[in-house]
Amino acid sequence: MTGCFAGREIFSALETVEKLGFQSVAVMPDGKPKHSLGELPTLGFYDADEAARKRIKQALSRFKHISIHQAWDNRWRDWIDCAGYVGAEIVTIHPPLRKRGESLDQYLETQTRFYGEVGDYAQSKGVKIGLENTAGSYDDYVRLIKAIKHPAVGATVDVGHCAFFDEVKSIADSDQRAKKLNDVLNQLVRDLGPRLFHFHLHNVRRPERMDFSKMTNRRWEPGSFVDHRCVTEGEIDFPRLFTSIKGIGYRGLFELELEEPQMEAKAVRSAGYLGSLLKQNK
Image (cartoon, rainbow, N blue to C red; front, side, top):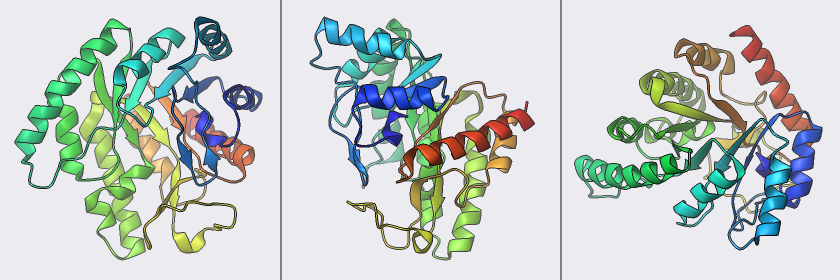
């Protein structure tokens, strides 16, 4: 994801992705998203004229696969329009969590109706939708994905965000929480099966093992695992995870989402490790 290279403008970020040897890329359509290392590069698609959009499309045409991550607004038709224009295969969207006092049946009814509409629009553009896990209840997320019967709508599993499921983050002991995280993550892969369209990959680390000296705007709760770390450094058992992934016959994309000060080095290290796991699990 170009968001691995915070502080760079979009064409510089795309050149870096290509220079590092990545054949595919994930981008955000617009807005001003940021994390602890600065503002993330986006396509600036909303207000771009046709000449600017053609330049964007030409820059992205060098990549074998493209995915789009939602912007931090509600302009879902624009996200999908962007995906259709540049030839992206999937748009990742963060669904809302169930509100306090809202029954599960009410939540599922509302969301399935809405994502049926989103799915119809995406299908008309030749695009799929992956609903990403962020927090809340594990059961709510799985039930939501299974309740949406639309062929264009499935799951984007963010492996690091599994640390923020209620069932995981409620465990006080870090060792037991890490064990639960890996159990939940592998169960999630099996539970979703063919409804799993896309992966976001990164690791989580314990705050006491982190160097925050180059990171601002810290947004992590005290004691919680810190996400978007280099794949080789953290609590997730990736060899076990890739065995589960192979078990369901997954054929989709793997997207790196990192928030590391050593941007290029950690991206290359993560990709190299993941590539070795993919070769082992062919």
